[in-house]
Image 1: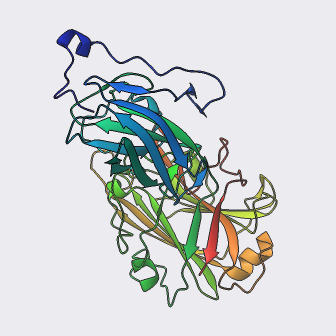
Image 2: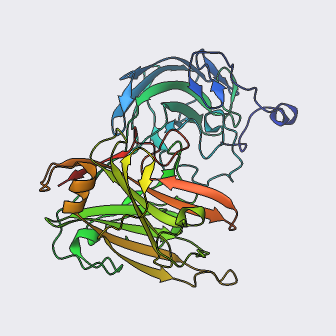
Length: 399
């Protein structure tokens, strides 16, 4: 937050704020435990005291009300309250250790509200974003033209108010009933036009892809806009389960040209489907930007039958030149149709499909930045470094 208007001396401003106290067992994230309690004092004399959060444990999509006592606020002072994820793409976001330029959006899950001050107390209500895969939501406060100099605070001078545990679970997505989908990769049907798609996050922990900074609108599937991230959507009819993926990519790459070659060693879109999350019976499908496919059935966890050939249909629309690193590509769109009778036979799903039916799926994007560094994105985070992990696979609900 703000250096402008900082009332401290130049020497004091040059000293970075101290790190919050670290203790075990308070609020644990990959960077250790963070203790957030005690008053926060700002340079101009404002003090934030006791605070409460209701509810004390929340879910994605639920509002949390924060109340805190305040004193010493100047007339007309602007205090805003923020709800943030503890870390973003490997940065210790809760502690303010980020190198992003001022004013740049750091995380689309951020929520902010101008605090309402009434008789020495402040209240604000903020909604936890959905999806949300972090274990806590961290509350911060920023006072315009001032910085926190004592008490729990971020490295940028914002006050740390508290951390509320969030009940995390698998991503939930819905599949609308479709009419007459032509599997051509163009996504022109009403079933796709009515959806924005679900954006894939980091495969291990669900943290957002750093490129994802925009909000997708219905009808934008197939736009290949990197600001909207890699997205997947589903639909269904009495014959097939359908999936569509929007995969922005500036360098389309895959050397493989034959069916069932190991597409996962380079770049591909992957889809896993099962009846439940026990990992006993499932099927896997992969498609590359070339339109080359891989399919396998798994009668037991990781016991794959790659000789099996599905009757699924696929189509790819690539915008760019595959395997030409000297140009700049836009990406590729994937559309697939998987017969229900095959899914039911191989996974134990109960046919015929019906509205309200739930199944477990996961979608992955395998990317090689610079054709070297592997990047994995997923619809629902695996929590362990294994794409075949099913405990936290997404729940797909047929509408």
